Length: 169
Image 1 (cartoon, helix red, strand yellow):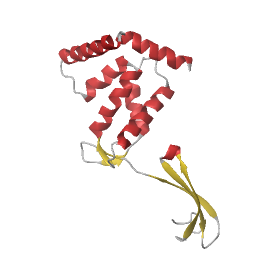
Image 2 (cartoon, rainbow, N blue to C red; image 1 turned 45 degrees about the horizontal axis):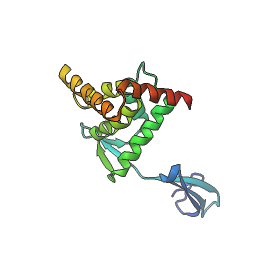
Image 3 (cartoon, one colour; image 1 turned 180 degrees about the vertical axis):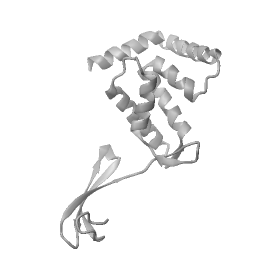
Image 4 (tube, rainbow, N blue to C red; image 1 turned 90 degrees about the horizontal axis):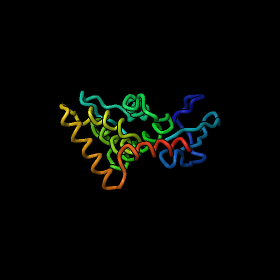
């Protein structure tokens, strides 16, 4: 690791600790040349391969931005969106792959978004599942209703309960 002060590339690790709930390692280093100390962070990189062939690092900010559009006009807070992005990243990392297709990111968003807000879920799903007709929407709504009946609640009641619980926090 190159010293940020004297640019020497010889340093020793003085202390190592986990950071970000184990997702990163924080290292305290000392330069062998000038003796000054500095901190580095080591993280694993999760790469997203886009349809165009471009590969870029995973970005929670992009997840939040995309989901925010689907949540426009819905009672969803920024904290809930940040938590959703964290859940998406955790589930993608749990897959054990260093590089994932962009389509998988969109699909990984669907389940937590559905729990958060079903209207936003339908908006987002219509893009990522490529709904072409009104029948595609109707089929998805029928599925939501059927699963709501299986749990004993209406989809709207589930969404409003989730919203009320998040407001209470």
